Length: 278
Image: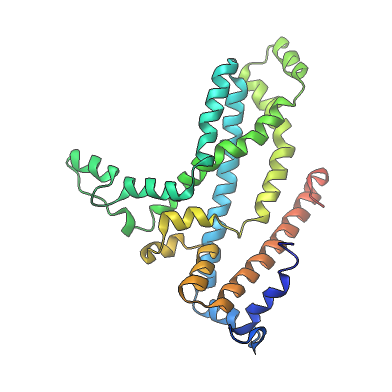
C-alpha cells in the first residue's frame, strides 16, 4: 500500500509540476530536473554527504553495538545487566526534537553549557553553529548515542543463542575471557553482522532526517558538511515548493539505493554465498 501504489507519483520527477494541472497534466520535461541538479553541484554534494554519514553510522555503529553486546553478555549479575541495558536503551526513545534542544543548550554561543565552561576556564567562546566541520563529529556522536541501545539487542540475542557448552569447553581448555570472545563470540556473530550490514547498505542513501533537521535546522552555513538528500528534498518541497526537483532527488535516491544493494549482494554472494540476501 505504502510502497507500490504511490510508485506512479515518481513521474513528477520528469515534469514541470503544476498543482492545477496535476501530475499527468503537467508539462513533460524529461531529464531537465536531473540536469539542473547535476549542473549546480547540489546532487554531488548531498550524495557525498549522505553516503559518508551513513557509511560511518553503519560501520562505527555496528562496532559499538557489538562491543556493548559482548560487554553486557560478560556481566555476571543479572540485576546489574538489566539496569545497564535499560540505561543504554533509553536514548532510543528520546525524541530527536528533544535531542536538538539538548544540543542547542550545549553548543549555543551566548549561554550554551560548553561555552560557559570555556569562559570559566578563561578561554574564548567557540561559535559551533558557524563551523560546519565540527558538526560532522557531533552528528555522528548523537546518532551512535541514540541507536546503540536498540540495535545492540540483535547482537545480544545472537550471543545468548550460542551453545554455552562451547564456552565451557573453551574454559576447561584454559581459554581466557578475551580468547573466548575472539575465537567463539566474534566468529559466531559474523552471519548477524553481515546480514545487518547488507540491510544497512540498502538504506545508505536514506539519511536520518529527524536527526539532521533537528540538529541543523535551516542553518545554511552548515549545509556544505551536513546537508543530505532527505533534508534537501524537504527544503525543496516546503521551502521553495519545487515538487519536481524534490521528486527527482527522491527518484535518484531510490534507484541508486537499489543498484547499491544488488552490487553489494553480488559481492557477498561470491565471497560467502550463505550470507547473501538473494
